Length: 425
Image (cartoon, rainbow, N blue to C red; front, side):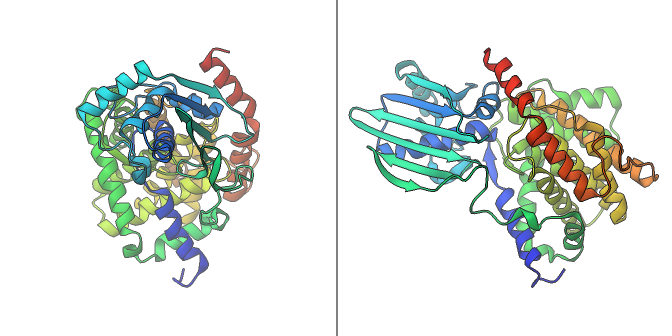
């Protein structure tokens, strides 16, 4: 692929857009960011807070610890963190720098300030509306469709910003329809690695740091350590364990940032850490590792595009298949073997549901990575799932479309039922 090809710059831009740093689980952080923007617009601390959130947002914030809050959980905690200590200029690192005094102030704020949470349904999956009141002054900020997409700002009823929300279109981002596996494969072989080095080096540094911390510390259910105790220290187990450990740390209060993929830190960890573990084991040079990471990241993004940011379909499935593709590339696989790796992986594990961000995400990540590795070893031996095997159909692109249809349309009622169970309705 030549640099002049429209896809070349698009793929570089997509990596830059998607591989962003975030502190903690991205859904509560998006609420904190929205609340921080609203506080800035209001001009001070509010006397009353109202957070409107779509069902999928509620699902993904309910059970996860918000970092830098002394282990507070839930939407009120996320909003309070953004209001009291947030720096909106830092976007998804909005509460990366919080003092002990600010943590105390958050807790006092929650005790003295009413925070109302409302389940809203404006026909889109990702929706946050934060309204703050102080005396006669009000501010209102809305984020829609992706984590930093501020579409509406008001102060005292005056509209300061308004971007129309046309369904679940992600306005302002590079056209994801330019992604397909054949061109991704061409890109990772021909890209000037210097064009993607900085973003991938940062992904490696951040995500391996939190994975190592997850292995060292006591977070969640300690799935990484459990896997090593169960299965030993071979590379397949280490790839699963390190990814799981990163998630366990992230879901359970670790204050290290991660580089996300498709809006999710868990997907960012899953798409990168196993590939890095295999690259280290195989002793490949740095540029080869970055090409494999780019393959994994872009394959994950390509699968996630028809699904959307939030779904009842676990995003780790897409990232596990992406990491399988990256591992296959590192192992010398052909293009056909790589695409069959992805097909095999999604055929194995596409039934896994997302019931919110929490400690069990780590175990799901371990299984998704395993599916990617199994998918590769199947492809290596020519033992593939083929057209007509369930949702698998002829060709990688058609199969990805089928998975997107299953996840976005077929699992709508599943998502609603999960949300009803989780909020007790």
